[in-house]
Length: 161
Image 1 (cartoon, rainbow, N blue to C red):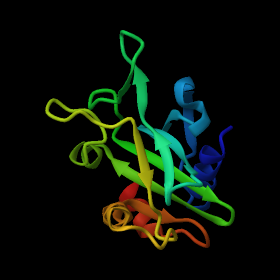
Image 2: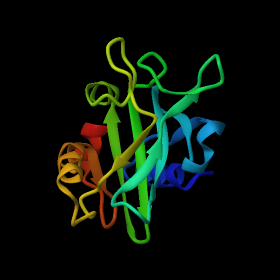
Image 3: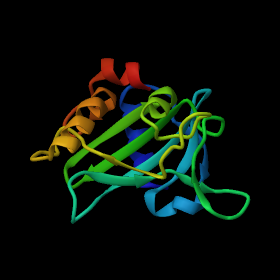
C-alpha cells in the first residue's frame, strides 16, 4: 500500500478512529500515490506531494483524461468532499486536508465559471525562505495543514477530517 495511506491509517489508529477502506487506485497519477478511499462513510481523494529540486515546496497533480484522451483538471462533480495531500520528507511529515469548496474557491478544481488546475504546489510550515507568492499560498494553505512530525493535534484533526 502507498506510504500516504499507511500514514493516514497510523494517524487514525492512534486516535482510535476507523481505518481507511475501499481504496481505489487512480492509475493515471500513480507516481503521486493517487487513490480514492473511504473513512467511515466519507470519501476522500489522496495524493502524495513530492519535493522538487528546482523550486521550494512540494508538488502534486490533479488531472484525468477527457473523452478525447486529453488531460484536464478534476471537476466539481467528480471531486469528493475532501482531498488529502500527504508530505513525507525525511523525519518531517504532515497532511493538507483541503475541502472541495476551498479547492473551487482557489480555482484548483473546475466549476461552471472556473477552469481549474492540473497541478498544485503545497508549502507546509516547515518550508521556509519562500518568495512572496509562495508565502501567500503557504498562508492560506496553513489552515488546512496538520503537522505529524512529532505529535497529532487532535482538535485540528477533528476539524479537518
